[in-house]
Image 1: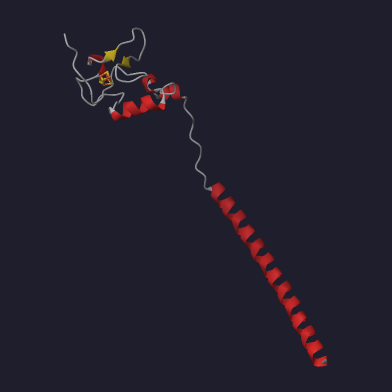
Image 2 (image 1 turned 45 degrees about the horizontal axis):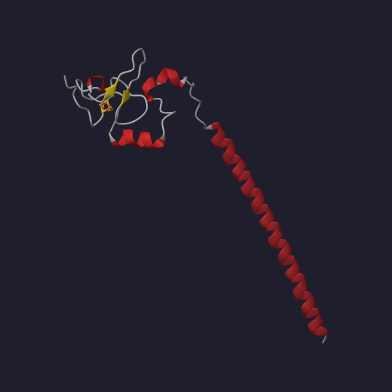
Length: 132
Ligand code: SF4
């Protein structure tokens, strides 16, 4: 009976030691992984590209490319018709298309096929010569 009691005590002592050992190694591993994450953050921050100088969009874009007031459905129509604001065909432009609606004193006109601004220099797959 005595041997059994001591055997149980030995087992419990070993078990407690194992628990402390595992808990300690887990803490060390987590500290080490935190250190490597912090190191990675420092190196990635130092490798960041310098920010580009921002240029106002008005200076970059053709005003006829501003689709901020155009619905997604109408933008989809433009894409289906392969509309581009600069025609790849020299003599076929929106300005000489039968479906173009010019807007006097404004840089952009419109088109009978979809809503939104249309560049006079634009083009799409439905270009049709003006009938005189
Ligand atoms: S049909 Fe095409 S080419 Fe003609 S005005 Fe409209 S977008 Fe321009």
